[in-house]
Image 1: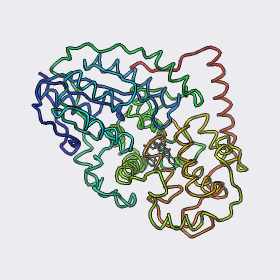
Image 2: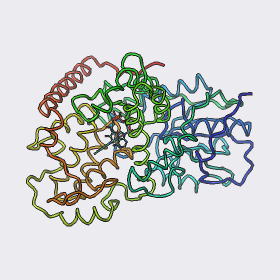
Image 3: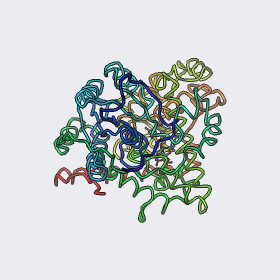
Image 4: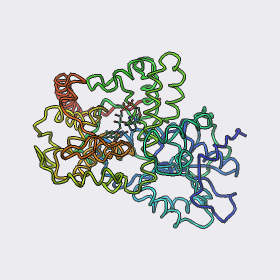
Length: 489
Ligand code: FAD
């Protein structure tokens, strides 16, 4: 019998307590946000609960017909990662993986009924679509079934870190830091569950599913430079050749705001977004090299833990996390007071999407996002603030900003994205600044400021080269019909 490891009681919360005996039915983990086998507290909890009740465990994933407008770029990355996950989880842990298509409100309760499950474990996301979906699932499953939600994404579970909407990094930092000794701990090594699943798993035709999804979302094509999956994520974190912690970390604090040095950043956001790597794993590994590069590690942990978890806090406690209604009162008032100020340029969404503005720097950042699929972090701030400056008003600016971010960024459709747009346009987690036209009291950024910080012309040329390289590779791939890279662990 494998030793079971209980997760910290704060790590999960009961969304529903079933009336029936816990024994008997299997445990099902509905995986949504944390798409990985290693270092996954939701999976660890599901296996622990199954072992305690001496029942088997299965993992279910639901592919929504449409989720926040995901295209080939995001869905291809996700499905190729899941294809590897299925192989890994079935080979190493002997846990069957089921894939459903449609609405999770239907597929998950149906599956629970079909296999007579006693416990549903889910991972946590603050996004409203999934929270509503979980409410419906709670109302649809049998009285017997319990439902546990595990925060497997944040180092400190969101409901433990704070019970309220935090005002800024300053107000949440101390709360998180105080709890790190309890939560930033090593993960147990997961063993196959004691009781084997006796039903058969279903065959998944990944290749035709991926082909179908890719052709449906072809207007935003896949990326060939970003290899999906857990192994690729770990390689990027600490691989010998190009790993962030092994090869690139030392310049993180000095170069991370230079868009001409994208390699100074970790590049982990696509993997963190899809849960193909755990932020806790990244933090643990970073701490191991802190003696060598203390400043770089501290800056990285500030972004990875404090800023990222602040974004989850905002989306969890602020129902209007993607609208002007979610701005602090001073910011909303100031933005509305300046909504009708005269603008030097006003562009439509289409003009912005096609990078047809008078600003070559902005156009370059837009093209970096459209073609490369990941805009540099510093440019994201400038990019969003210019949308505020060049559209009819703050509401429209926010809408366009979120639309473009979610459509083209491989790491888009994420709390970090909503908060990034809200920070830039609505001043969320920021303070008021000197009042000026259009921006009101929202922090302002301009071309001259960028010129003082980095080689603007160099960045424009860099993106030009990048885009032509991407286009060339795309044309070659479509001629050769080369399959996208998928790593083999
Ligand atoms: P690194 O600097 O190596 O950071 C490591 C990790 O820390 C990131 O992967 C991320 O999880 C976290 N992090 C870094 N910066 C921030 C931040 N400002 N806020 C919260 N967490 C942070 N991030 C996304 O993950 N998805 C998005 O869709 C997204 N959209 C954004 C839109 C705008 C307008 C702005 C201003 C920021 C946005 N960000 C978004 C935040 C940030 O720009 C990216 O997380 C970062 O550029 C990702 O690259 P990296 O992993 O190489 O960064």
